[in-house]
Image (cartoon, rainbow, N blue to C red; front, side, top):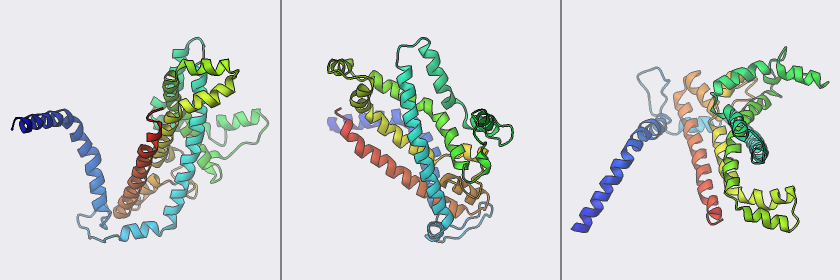
Length: 294
């Protein structure tokens, strides 16, 4: 009996400590997901008090719509297009900040500041930079003797414009994580590599890159998940255009739900996004085990 009472007390203490975190988590995360799942089986138009259950019709309509697959393709392009430059540039920025330079703390703040700046504010500034006439980007190209670009107003370059803004904002985030990871690499590994005659690039390839590989994997998953939920920069810069060239899954959800008032289909898209996110998270959990004992 004493053992059961002790276990009961431990459970009560755990509940008391976790309750403050679980309540907002349930209200603002779990409940909305469950509510969206329920709405995905209805034909609610967001405005009428009445609705009907339609079963899996919304999922059928979404998955057989060319617009969904186009948005999924755009999301994949956006995710890969932001992930690779963000990680590569972030790594080299981290290498620079990790070197012996004066004012290192100031430069770290400068690099990280875009990440803590609201995406809306960043996107508004970049929308001015990308103006075809008089924009700083085209002025810079003209100074280098290159032709200007239509940037956000052309379906050929609109996605590139959104990717540039997203990468610029995310470089500091990845750089800070890489800096922390580099600090955890034992100095003895660099000393051993130096004794073997390794130069900068050899140390980077055989010591630094393997040492920060768990961080690289983490940032890969986080960047891809962020790409799935990207909305602010797309809304400010392109509104999903031109001709749907920058319409991602999240923006498709917005258009279906709040422009076309097809809340059932929008909820189905939301559940698909959650499913993809869960798959990516499970992949991170499974694959990251190989680095636990690194």
